[in-house]
Image (cartoon, rainbow, N blue to C red; front, side, top):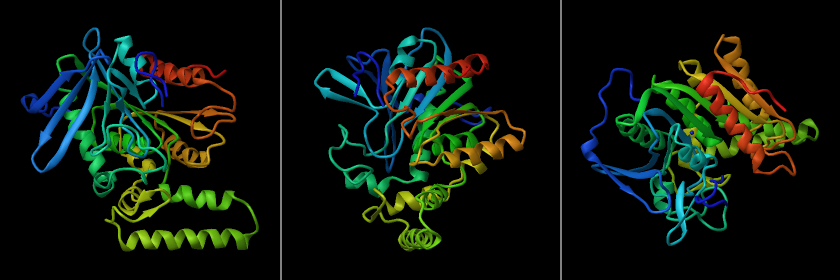
Length: 335
């Protein structure tokens, strides 16, 4: 984990709509994370919407980062006065001052990253009872609605960068919010997250009998989730039934087909968490529809987009290429 003091570690309102009521927005500067300002929007009967926006040097486009799955906070303190970030490239971009960099906290995320279990197994029960694709999308929309009303945000160009689960959210935002002019999806599923499981069931090899056994087990788990789709206490594959049932219904391929945004995809060619084939299906659908879409395939890389032995400099280059595409429309040459 890199500290905020150095470099962060590791995704809007309809055109013509009125900006959100900023009088309902609380904001504060937090020592150690300048130029980021922390905001909280209060809604009756709903958890607070908490987010951070970096104040740019002048009025600038909004760049929203959407983190992957789980409940790790986007920004937290490792010790009093020592903040850290769990979203790669957020802080360097904010401190560069050329964009209004933004990140939103998931409701009921703990103050520090959970220890031990992966996925959402170590998350607070309130988080798992609340979290779904729909609830997270509503939170993101609320935050963006406030952010585009800030005086230093140029709402005419908005980039949403989504990683893994965040890529699914970025595609949904592009579908719903015309002001999202660009989306960059890293490790993105295409037709559905359920499709990813099916691809992996085939990719694990063996004869057809073994593949059928895995597919039948997959179908059985899917049926169990479908029988209790709102359960935040029952888990499969590291996440609640509620989370899976809502995300299985989402297709980034369909969502982006209904959006106007330009699309930039990044996929590790050895990714097994979200099979590279899933991103390829997404690319193929958009490409054949005549959409403005680019894909960056990283040889040897898995879901973290880093080939074996590569340092964080590889990711720095990938994010720099995304920003170059957003700022100038140019595609960086691959090395």
